[in-house]
Every structure is written in C-alpha cells, then in structure tokens.
Length: 105
Image (cartoon, rainbow, N blue to C red; front, side):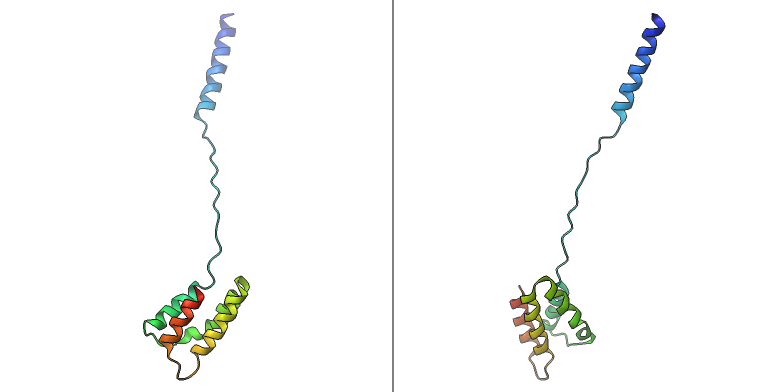
C-alpha cells in the first residue's frame, strides 16, 4: 500500500511539474498592409518642389504609373498626365510638381 501511494505521488508530482512548466502558447497575428504605390512618386515630386532637377528617375515613371493604375486607376491616369506635363520643355517644374502632389493626396 505504501509503494502504491509513493508511485501515485510520484506520478502526480511529475504530471503537475510538466503541466506547470510548459509554456503558454500565445499567437500573434500580424496584418501587413500593402505598400502605397504612390509613395515613391511623392518623394520624387517633393524633391522637385524643393528645387531638384529631373534626372534619371524619369526612366522609372512608367513603372510608377503602372503600379498606381493597378491600385487606383483614376489616380494612375492623373499621375500619367501629370508626369507627362512635367517632362515638357519649359515647364515650371516646382509649380507643376506642387500641383500634382496636391492632386495625389
């Protein structure tokens, strides 16, 4: 009887120690939002407003336009027209860039 009691005590204490020492599992769900397709264009336009000239970033305009059209066709069309105006000779780059920035908000 004493042996049976000791075995039960050993099994019970082992079970409690295993259950008490186990980690609780907390699950965290991370929701990733899609990147703003206009963020890069806004950065470039802000540079133009500050007085930076057009450089090689002009070659990436078609990519910006395509990604903007996929996300929001209306803003994509607006962006396409605005970037075409910026590339015309004799355009006031600061004023047009500022105007396009306001439209893209």
